[in-house]
Image 1 (tube, rainbow, N blue to C red):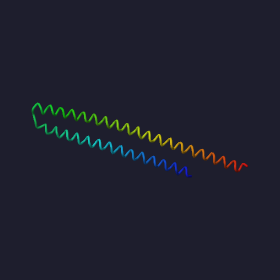
Image 2: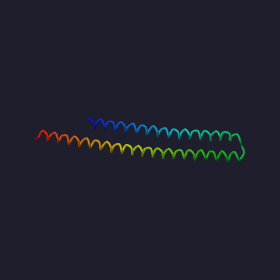
Image 3: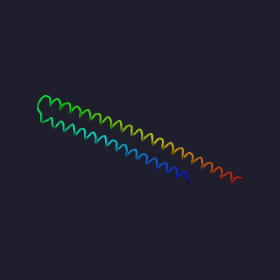
Image 4: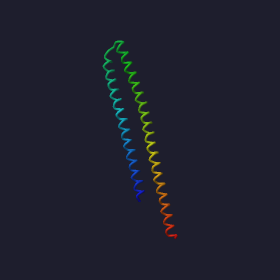
Length: 126
């Protein structure tokens, strides 16, 4: 009975750990997205200011800001993909370790049951 409680406790602990990691990962992603939106908004504001100018220099600057926005979006997408991949791998590692621990606990439980049954049989068999 104690082993069952321990297994349940380990399962609950592992689930809480996974949920906490998931919340942390989502928070990190949202912070990145928020920073990205702010940077894009700032660059777009700069573009609007330059839109009022009509000389060759302002056209070059607008082109450069557009390039920076494109580069920022590409970097953001790559960073998100990398983070999501790392987070998925991390969660998979945690789940694998948790499953291994659970398997070991279940094996110990089964061995204890076999030993208890053997002792019970030898006690009643004599």
